[in-house]
Length: 162
Image 1 (tube, rainbow, N blue to C red):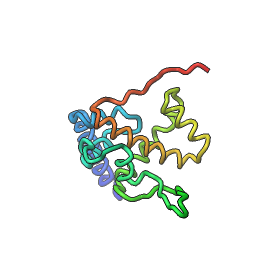
Image 2 (image 1 turned 120 degrees about the horizontal axis):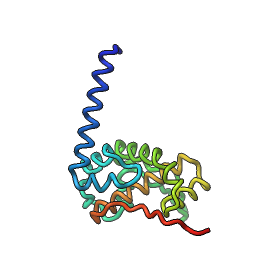
Image 3 (image 1 turned 45 degrees about the vertical axis):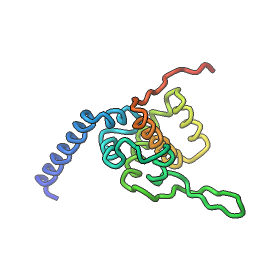
């Protein structure tokens, strides 16, 4: 690839990023979604384009299942077994949410909030990649709640006494 072609591609990518940022500032739903850690302008615009105000989903788990972020279940003899994520549903949004969760996890774990304590406990019990997918699942559910309630996500920075 020539240097000139690379600089042209870089300029086009920068223009697209500016378009996403402009849309995220202009659209009310996208502005609400950007308040969630791990969700930026690109993820917010993709979610709004795919699900609108999330009226199609009765609960957050339905959105997470549609994205393929819930565990597969197999049942034999009445005993359910959970395995890896189903990977059904919207591959692009699932990938974006997982990348967003991966980038936000270190910051979330450092905070003494309910979400931070949950993530820290999960990292203590499970492998980091499993924790990232679980956080992506939680972010999808939070996104559903934010869109349905029309409220910004509020991280409660309340310190818990030891």
